[in-house]
Image (tube, rainbow, N blue to C red; front, side):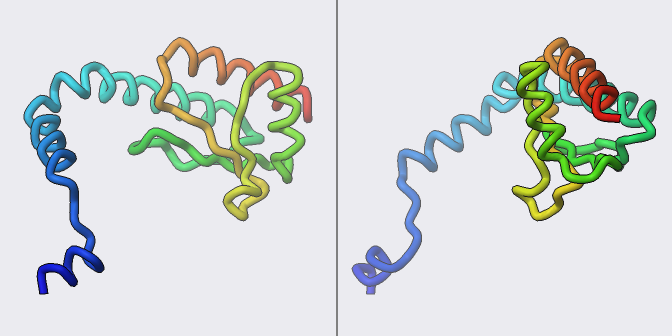
Length: 128
């Protein structure tokens, strides 16, 4: 029976399990400033969306991405404009079967997100 279980079962490598146990024991050092950075970034994103009539989003409270809706419709032109003119990227919603939405990453250094939101705002203004 053990041989069948080894063949068909999902067996974790002992080394991977051991490394995970070591990592959990040092979680504070691994996380570092990331939780505080994400809180700052979520607040920045929430302020950005609250100040825009052309972007609708639930307040970012958890996670490292946000998925706002652009009232301008299909976000492919927005993503292309951002990339070509502002050297900035968002993920168009068509990849998630929601073409009027786009994905924004919040898990970056705060200064980078601030600049990205400025560029996103400029691109949205351009496409009015």
